[in-house]
Image (cartoon, rainbow, N blue to C red; front, side, top):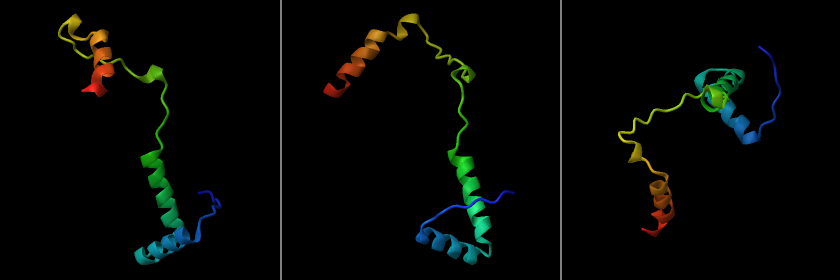
Length: 80
């Protein structure tokens, strides 16, 4: 493990300390767990567009999807 120093507002430190005492843990453990949770849930690896596979939309007929129809829907959508 590596030690780091961070600056937090007093209410945040108080909440961390209270939670640590209530759960019988150290503040270090609580902060480390919070940072790890943030890392796992919020940080997403960046991918290259080359990593994405093309989608197969399985259109039944070549005329089933026309750009003109889509553009017309986009333009007139707010008018309905």
